[in-house]
Length: 235
Image 1 (cartoon, rainbow, N blue to C red):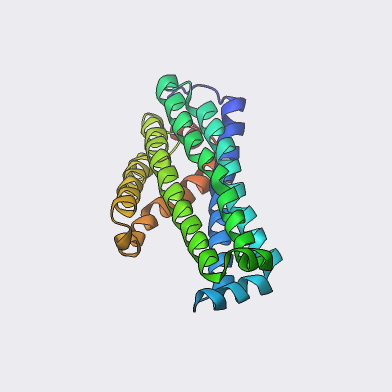
Image 2: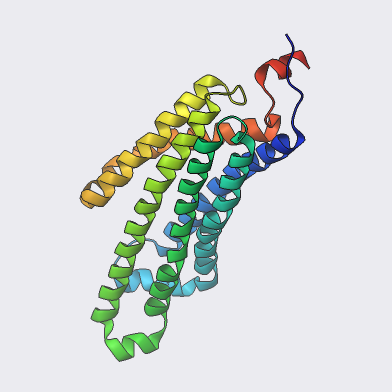
């Protein structure tokens, strides 16, 4: 069976996309782990003491999560470069949605502002401990809303990218289909979290499919690039 020659640009961007898929998981989950580990449990005052005692590491965790938004831009562009020859209109729309997700990272100033309120004594002296706690809580709610709004953009963009992959043999068809399902599921999780935030913890298990899909996609693209399956078998 004859196959079209590999496109060096597609191969390069596919491997970049594969690497960034995996990098984003490390950045986001690493940031989440550090934040949870440092903050711990207990009262607002007790958690503040924990954060103050590890302030540089806590700031590092916030920067890791911000960098995940920055690298999302690179992922969106790389996926577009891989798939634009397959379905340019859909790939471009998917890129725009993923860029919308990335712009959610601009709200990182909210988390840094909340950190300053929490750890700088001058705010407690000027506002009072009760008001500082209320403002930090408000900042946390804003960050929660921003995250889930970003996930809505992610869901549409990721679903569309996997839809275009389904038209190719760059990924196994089962993985492309599973990626579409997992991406669409994140919209349900985000919508539930925004409408009924008290159910947020109950739907967290729904994140597992997209983590599996993105890890598998990242490994596949990093290892094989944009090589059609028939070409890989013929090589």
